[in-house]
Length: 218
Image 1 (cartoon, helix red, strand yellow):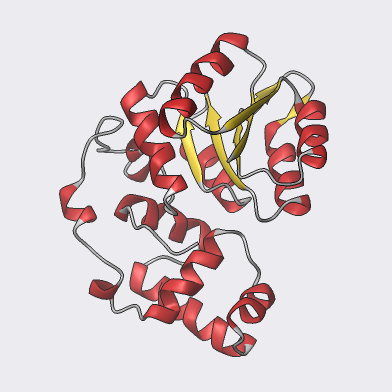
Image 2 (cartoon, helix red, strand yellow; image 1 turned 30 degrees about the vertical axis):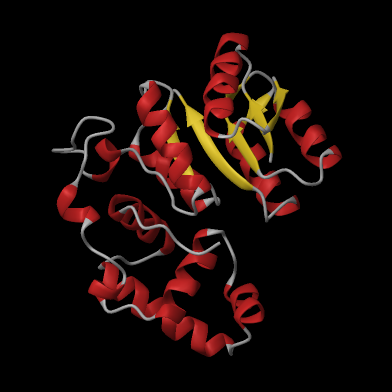
């Protein structure tokens, strides 16, 4: 596994190296300290598996880097690791294709669990973002939500496949090509998925699924 850590603080990069090596001892971990290096390394290392991306970079906007990474390297999993943790930033990152958003204030066990969830095919959203008014502390368990499975909401195996591709930032056309089904069928599945989750768009779906903690097929 090859991982790129994008952060301008050396101590944070070193701490992330330690965490990543604990999860995947055989991983190759590369560093970038700014936007330019991140885009350059992603281009040179065409087989990246994971990018940990800080949003506050010295030479540009981390959201712009996220957009560029998703455009040029759609198969790469991107997880945002940021000092920002407001709902708007989380929603924007997920909407741009990130599969996780981890606040830098998260404790090591939370960071480990979040990365393991994403690497297993799930997504991670800070629990306090899911309910700003009465959110549990970061890393707190949510037994009620965790007990709800896709089948409990009436989702079929095909719809779960659509959810997984949708969360990877795939367009309807890309999903229909991937699953070899008509685009109209994809639209119907997405409508059913949003209805089952009681949300109105893909970003809200990502947040809802993050709360549920589903592990989806890759």
